Image (cartoon, rainbow, N blue to C red; front, side, top):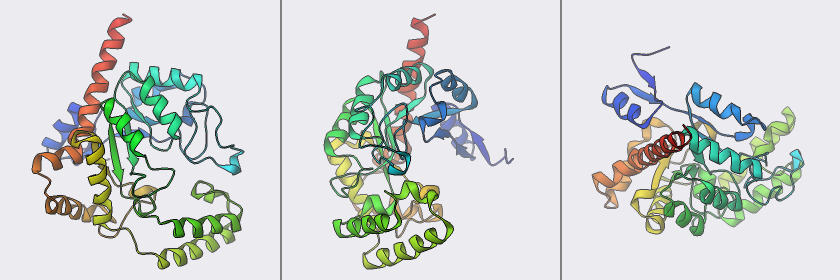
Length: 300
């Protein structure tokens, strides 16, 4: 609709070219491998349409992998496959062959570690934070961070308040609210009636009011920790505004400079900040493209 302002990138080089032209860059990702069902051929179709990363699972298990947040409303037990399924391993291999980045955010720890091991290319955590600072299932612990870095991957630290600052007392209050409404977590909000959703929204506001909101310095604490564990070459930044993201000081794109300002205040160099904002992810993307070329050449 607005080709003079924004362009779709299908490669890492496209990102650099489009940015240099002064346009905004659009990139297509798929946040749940559920969309392929058990049809492996759909991966090639989605790649043809422009998809360049796929999150293996989301809220709830699927045929590819166990989720970090099982959904009781979907009949999920704690785990279904014990990590990746056999089909999930085929999915990872085909994503490697096509040049689609494997995204391990949202999946269980077992699934994540197995996906990193199975992949022939580095993998990404497109939007996760560190469990050392906010102990919630969606975040990654230090073992996961080290495994991701050892394979050359990147974790994109996510500015979603509940993943940045979530004290045990707040988690317990939210757990009681979920139980009161008969759901197991945020992933089941869509199953609530209109009246019960209104109850949830009001009571969530009351819970939030009892605890200080996550701030930009809280968010950058996660970046600091990830850099300490993984090294500067393996950490990135993500917002997730359309998925509930936002923290005090970075609630929309217009406030993005506040994050850079805090990084500068803490002593990060211009080169390091460039890596965090885009360089590290583009490096992984280029490596995924290289591996795909090698795999395709080997079968020709």
